[in-house]
Image 1 (cartoon, one colour):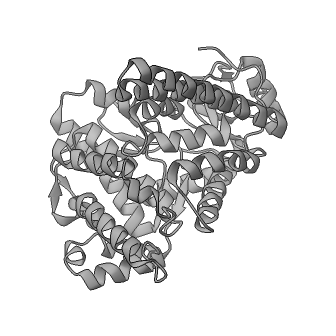
Image 2 (image 1 turned 30 degrees about the vertical axis):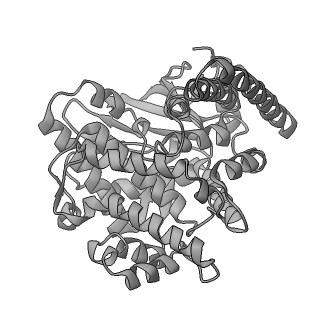
Length: 436
């Protein structure tokens, strides 16, 4: 993979890159209109999505930072984005062109005040893997194998200006209107700024490790504050394969269930007991060890769940609430999904849409055990998303609905469900976290 010897840092450089990408997308649309003359609409649209996804991703991987992080977040929305975008954007999880060795050493020295050779007994300047905000290197010190995460230069400083450039594109994609869209963007902006504060991440990592260390078949690295800084994190090197690699080769159902139960318990314990959750559940943040343990990594994106959101959110997850129209509507108002000023037609549309969505999505919470290998369950989620993504009535309404806390809570659950389905985990005890 080609290595990056420099990253566009200034606002002008980054804006120019995005404008150039926009021009390429424009050319792709011209090709699309031409292709429709000789091909079916579906064939032409598929080529358009593939070309756009490739051009957009090629631009974002050079920029790194928040644009690439947004692409990674969108890759988890499998029911919203076309498959070509999901496949391409998912590369942002753990397959990004790394920094060159010279730029690694320069970045490390600027952040830490010393070269890696002055701190570790051994340090490999070649990246082991690279993601949207930083890349990981192997090191050794005092006989311990270590992982050193180095943040890309300029990432933190460019977040606000990058999001300002991306905002119009995302607003058009999701049909956002009004002041609510600003709340959503500030929520994403604040979380991205937190993710670039590696001192905060080390602190959060230690808190989660201490709180969740007694969950069965779950393991964590140790984190070293004295070997970390604002843009550098040093932790134990953990041996294992990425969760996506594990699910691709695993044939042991008992082991899949064991890993799945550990993953589910980890999230339910955080959400219900800590009211704070690891809101970045993609395969690159989890390993599976030879001992059959799930290893959880990267706690930069932690979402605090306020009680005024937590309570109605999980009341809506109950089967009894879905059967009680008055209670259902009451909680929808509390979560700002329905509003008093909604025109009657719009009110009824969103009430019906969200009732259908929640009736499907909350099914795991309506039983003591759930089979996450059930293709029919995930097929219903996909069919719902596909149907409403093409709904012209929906596009005529203001889709900026719901508390800002939905962004990372929904991201957490969509990501968790996808991981559980990839594992094909069965017989998962839904409320097992209560015994922890």
